[in-house]
Image (cartoon, rainbow, N blue to C red; front, side):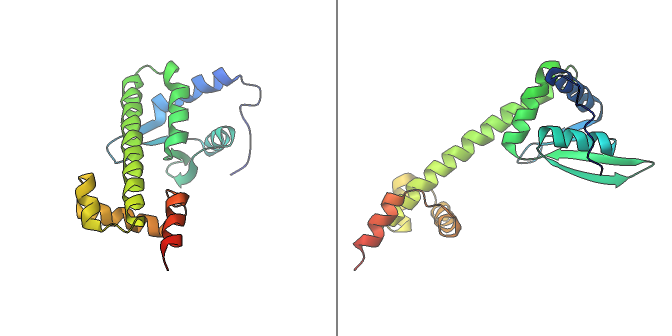
Length: 172
């Protein structure tokens, strides 16, 4: 795909309005999945220019009667930024975008709560508490505790360096 910037002389607002219009005519917002997915389809050169301009999402090409490119956004922060950018200019899809943003906010809150719970679980586990006692203390199931500990063991960043150092220094 050639790297052409069709929007060189356009103001930011003009690009935002154009993107909102393109979304209303060729876009798709999938909120049925666990996450929200935005896809805008069109001419490969134009879609490539949009991708380059906003520097988010992925572009794939397909061939129907003519070449078509799909700009797909799945990362919540990138998706939220694009939706907030086009929201003021939407008409027929404004309600769907509002609902998608609400869903994304709920997902973000739920994920933050899960991470906080996982940190609590791991902190107790690092204090050599049993999985059963952690589950009882936090009011969660044993499998939830096990999954949080497994995520911690495989994850790159421990939730509390202090708790980890304390556990390793306590061992003989």
